[in-house]
Image (cartoon, rainbow, N blue to C red; front, side, top):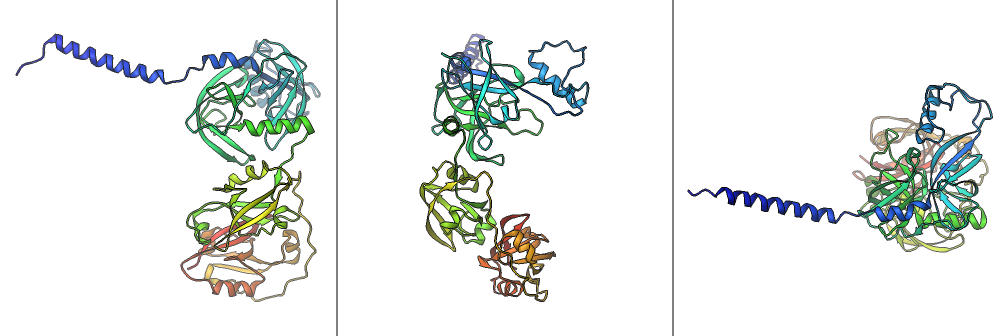
Length: 481
């Protein structure tokens, strides 16, 4: 058997190495180069700090003398907060001290700046520092807590500005870059990809957040998120973290929403949002089965608020909103941003599933109240007394709802869950103290009628049960044995 010569063997290894290097170089050539983007846009990104008067309390704010850290060093704020938690050397009452809180970006040459509401919330004085080290005391033009957007104004002209892009055109997997001041380290750039779009967070029901894996840390808040064209597509706002540090999940406010809020704040000093007036919940697999749906989708109406556009349009508890103004509603979280972005007074069509049928409902959108006040209903008399017939079939016992509880809940009828035993009710999540107002889309008028409804339910299927708990309404899927 002939063996290859040493020359041939070495030549083969060299060819393989060149091939591997070429493939590696080719892969690297497809990675984005952010250098020009950073150089072009960093001058328009600002550092924001505030001065505020702390309450008179234990906890400090001042460093021990043996820590010789300059006042403007980015680590000083972090160390002061650390020693503040340890309660050493509290400041004198009324003393104001600087805190480096976040970032922002300039949107006009005459000094308008965008940042987050939570960056400047509660501040007595807001300071903006530019890339050329100039500092200005900013005027807060307006701030909106629901969208977490704030508009500042500094007294300067001819400033560098960012270019505004469109988040709608972003695709999941697309490269994005953030510039900001994490932990006070100004003009830090971090890159990543868009992980998801239209995320709903408990702290921002009216914001369809962009999710990215860009490294965002305390101090990045309010800074811009850029696409590869160097356009701002979002405002970095929140991170998901179990430790307080970056864990690969960051959220940004879409720039279209932020600019709309900014325009309203500049023109009127307030933000008007569309309002439908419903309490909604997600449609789970069990609830979808109980409503005879082919798959989970839409926003389930658990409660219709008094004096609301939904009440005027005859939307009903148990309706499942699957389309709003021609746009599909896949989850309950996708509905509030759609409604909030709709102009007040606009007439829209809402498609709902009601008792297995598609129904089109015309709604005139109202303005979201600052406090969603609910109209008081007149008190009712004491409901009739009935024997404890509590539907042993479901493993729960019920009794009439006291009149004062009906008035408190602002409902006309229902039954009060007194005890939950082992069985379908417990498995569904129903608890003692709950008030059941409907079962299988039939209103519950009292204890005896509730027992009749339960007796008539077919075995082997799930039915929706509407429950009032702690002032809120929610559907549960109850499987009938």
